[in-house]
Length: 461
Image 1 (cartoon, helix red, strand yellow):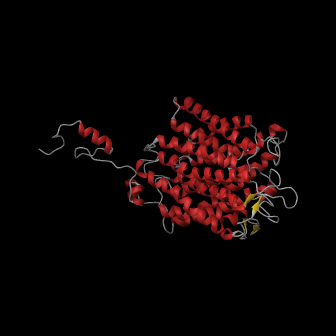
Image 2 (image 1 turned 90 degrees about the horizontal axis):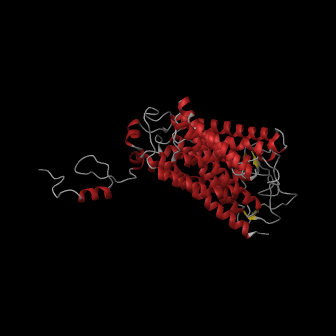
Image 3 (image 1 turned 180 degrees about the vertical axis):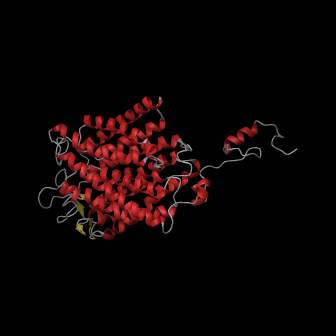
């Protein structure tokens, strides 16, 4: 029987997760210099177009089809979204389902397809921040096509595809069903996956010209805070939507997402205060994202008090981790490694300490602090390590292939001019020249200044 309430919640959650990609674009766009903001927006926006097509053609099938190629990826039974119209997911056909499910009702398959699509879209977009200011647009697009096909779709199969969920005879991925590591909404499949790929591309592309000698300040901090706020809003679909039902578990995930994000902001700002003497707006926005990242795998497995602790730890650790790039000399432009890779690892591992089996009836095991010993922590560490290694290797090989074929990095001249002009023939802001000089006042401001000058001002004598 179809559950219309659950269906409405999942579709609304899919729309919330879709909003996260434009939110990410503003978050990253505000952090780059003004000459590269459109390029950063486009690197995110193109993921919506490209990944949606790939998902329909074969991505959903490879992610949620029956095990194929030795369990590396799903099969082709859903290629072109065949066998999805009029079909349902979540029904226990033979015995209890492998994931918590509220009764015998089901979801339309296509609602689940669209919800999972939005995860596939934002994951490669996360990578873009690490390699900002130096990448050819079409080379980036080629990387997205290759990486989601070879890396994201298989990893999603390992982590999200539970036995029997998309069909009575469906055999899912090894992390979910054999290893039994817990990842409620994508700490491994999304954040560790993207963060490891980002680290690999940083090594492939090298440092930006002038880094770290030149301070490359964010050009629009309000954009950053707007983007972080949109991400926080959309993340409720990401996390609470992963309950796949309008249920108590969704409420727990919603609550935990709020609490962990709040304490992560506080944790990050406290580190800034003690280390630098000032709490910053950029730090508050980054702390919020760090908390959202860390609670993602744990939101359906920890209780609210555990979420408070997890967020505080993640905010502080990520605030410290973003400084590692200066110590080790890798140019992670917008701190993707420090926030998404480190935050994803922190959240995934802390399930092994804070996992409370009373929160979720499908919990694979209790955390150390709830009498479970070290078993679940070991499972979490194995999942995190496997995804990290696989994604790093795939991204490294793909990046090198693109680098030595079509070229991955723009020329030094293009980098100095700015990618908005050289890659897209556009500029984000229309600057005017005041009095024949090289002023940078915007047109409205310049007009106001001109009105205050004598009529002969600026004219040749």
